Image (cartoon, rainbow, N blue to C red; front, side, top):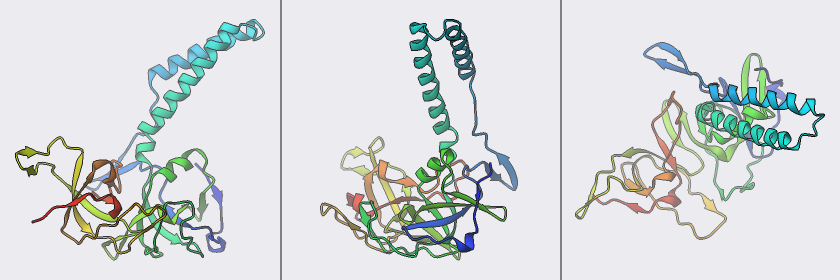
Amino acid sequence: MSYQEVDIEKLRIINGECLIEIHSLVENEIDFNGTKLEIVTKIKGSNDFAHENDVMDLVKRMKKFHYKDQEAAKEYTKMVASLNREYDKDKEDHEGKQAVRHGKLVKVSEKNIDYGGWDYSCEFDAQIGDEVWFDATFTRDQMDMSEKVFENNGKTYMLIPQKSIHAAKRNGEMISVNGYVLGKVLPNDRKDGSIYLIESKTARVEVVVPNARVPKYVADIWNNTTVKKGDVVCMNKIFAIKLDSTLAETTDLVRFQPRVIVAVEND
């Protein structure tokens, strides 16, 4: 796919976004012990083909009666809606799950916007040249729109909000960005009294990189829990989000903000 050609050197960013160099929108390769394996993300099932054939038959029937066959029209609308739902689900299941989540930070916003529509504000610690990990939501959006994806000299770039970046790597070291804590999920087999927490909805996470900055929140109901490297913290497991959940899995770390921590385990 080709994108809008832009002179990156002349591109000004002033609205709290940043420019990331990515290899593509979809993580479509895995390096398996030196062998490149292609990930198939676009899959079309036999049911989809059957639906499309049925739709075409309905169109022919409607044309035959000059689109006055009301029952055929209702059936057509229902079937197209069903087909669209299946397409969206298929896209989420395959392409969406492989949406790229990391790249190289190339440019940052000339102005750091405090909140900018987000519910928190934080100093931005990532630097140009860092490898960064960000929210895949913005990649998925560009799969359809591509309005913030550019090309220059054979390279692909994407504009994303600076606040969507959670971590960076600089000189081989992982760095917290935007007040996020980075950690590794531990087995949930800790005994609490006479009860084992194996099936619990609670995630136990060992802190690998504490948050370097303390976020400020719009709502004053949030408290930031102070943590250090090696601490084991507990939270609802939905908040322990993988930095990269694609099959390529460029890192096994999870990220979370300190406000979601509900407990810190004692030694």
